[in-house]
Length: 460
Image 1 (cartoon, helix red, strand yellow):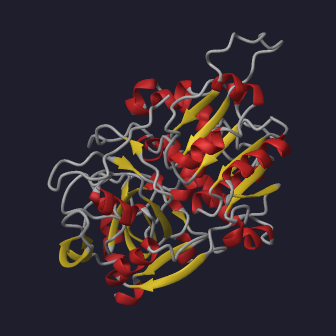
Image 2 (spheres, rainbow, N blue to C red; image 1 turned 90 degrees about the horizontal axis):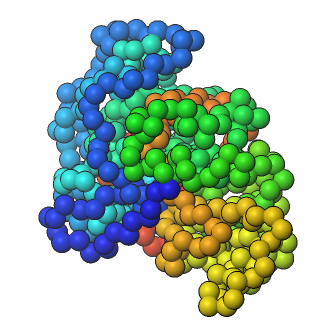
C-alpha cells in the first residue's frame, strides 16, 4: 500500500516544492512524475456517439485567443488577476475545452500557497473543480458534445491547462460529467473532487462494491483487471495489495466518518448509505448536529459529538460492539489517530499498547483487519497492528481512463436519479476578482458545512 508522505510547511521561497494533491479537507497525497504526453491506450465504449469535428465546435462557440486568469506568483501571496493570458489548447483527441461558469473553492486553494505544498511551478494557476459549457468537443467519439453543460473535475493539478481559476479550462472527456436537469450549474461546481475522494475511499481503499446502486462500478475489481504497468507506480500498492476481496465493507457493516461536515464526508455518507453500510458520523454537534440530524439525506445511523474525542471513541465502541472495521478521517493526523482507537475489537488495542507482555492465546479464528482512510493525513504513531492504513489513489481518476470514465458516468446517473445530492451552497462570490475574498473567508473559518462557489458569468 502507498505510504503517507509528510511535507514541509515552510519551504524556501523559489525552491522546488514537494508535491501532493489535496482534497477539500486538505489531504496530502504523494505523487510521482507527471503523466506523459502520449495518447492514452483507452478507447471509449462503443455506444458513445461520435461528435462533430473540432472546427464545427469552434464555429458554434467562438474561442478567443486570450483570457483572464488568476496567477499565483509566490508563496504566501494572494492570487493576481491577469488579463491577456493565452487560452489553453487541447493536446490529445480525447481532450475538450470548457468555458467556465462557476468555480468551487476548496481549502487546498489557500492552504497550498500559505504552507508551501502542491505548487509544481510558479507562476501557478489553481482550482480543482468547476462547471461550465463545452465550447470545443473531443475529436474522438465521446458522450460529450459541444454546448453540453458539464462538471469539470481536475485532480491533475500538475497540468495548468486543467486548473479552474481561469475562464477556459481543458479537460479529458473521461474527467467530465454532464449536468442533468435535476441540479443547477452552481451545484455542479460543489462536488467534483469530493465525489472522487469519496468514491475511491470506499471503492478502492475499503473495497465497497457499488454495482447494486444505479449500475455502479466495482472499482477494485476494475482496477485489478488493468495491466499493472498501466497503474502509476506510486499507487500500485494501494490499488493491488491493500485489501483482500473478501475483506471489503458490505451491507450491514459499520463505517465511522470523522469530520462529517466536510464535502467529502457529505458524499461519502450518501454513497455508504446507498450500499447499505451503517454510518457513524463524528461532527461538532454544536455547529452541525441539528442540521445533519434533520436532513434525511445526511442523517447517519449514529451521530457522535467530536467535542470530547475520548468520549467519542467510547460511544463508537459501545454502539458498534467492537465490530467497527472501517473508518474515514477527513480532518487530519490527530483525529485519524483518535479514530484508530475506535476500530476493531478492544483486545487489538490492548495488545498493541502492551507490547512487552507475554503473548495472549491466539483467537480461535484469525482477526480480520480493520481499515482506516486518512483524507488529510494518517496517525503519527504509524501503522498499527490489525489496522491497515490507506491513502486515496487520486491518480486513478485522471491517469487510468477506464476508472475516470466509469466514475464520471456513474455520477451522471446518481445525479439524474437524485440518488446523490450535492453539498449545500453556503454563499456565492461574483467574478474571478473576488476569489481571494472567498479564500480569506475560508481561512477565517466562516465557511463550514457546505461550499463557497464563485460565479464567473457575472464578470463576462
